[in-house]
Image 1 (spheres, rainbow, N blue to C red):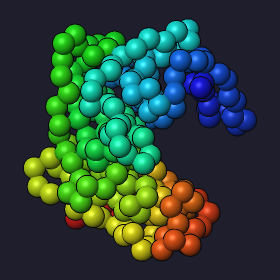
Image 2 (image 1 turned 135 degrees about the vertical axis):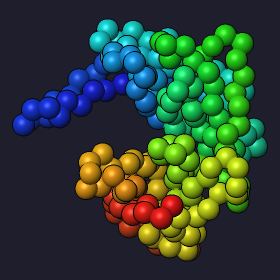
Image 3 (image 1 turned 90 degrees about the vertical axis):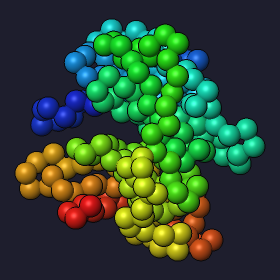
Length: 220
């Protein structure tokens, strides 16, 4: 397992390996650390922990490892911690098998505060597995459900709501990651990356090539 950098600043993109983490299991989500430009946090779904990686030196260390990052013991597909985001002094992470999002206090370096416990902040109402997620300006959570073929929104108080998709649709089938638009023109767009339901065909037979779907979130 390796952490890579893709540099898009020049006309010809370049890539480099930042570091290898041989003791990792399945590197998955990644996020920057507020106020720290030279390091990122990387979710390791395979070993149920989060690593801190210095992008300048390649050095890495364990940043967080709590029970809420573990997969469900009897789950067919063992997937625990998946997506990660840093916001207001907390590491937010989701657990795919739980269909839930937690938060854990971290220090300025992105390391979990000693003795801190994870707090449940949102859960999908239908018990669907969760892949990646994002946090919007209002603190709401938008979740990609992958094999659930939906994008759902949750505020941690009311039951989650399906924004688009269903088990029988290809609209966002196999959705695996989300991102908010960053310009004035697309600030109300949620971009969704899909895998085309290759891992779990719609109605048992339907798949399609991967794609990016744009959702207008105006009104949500």
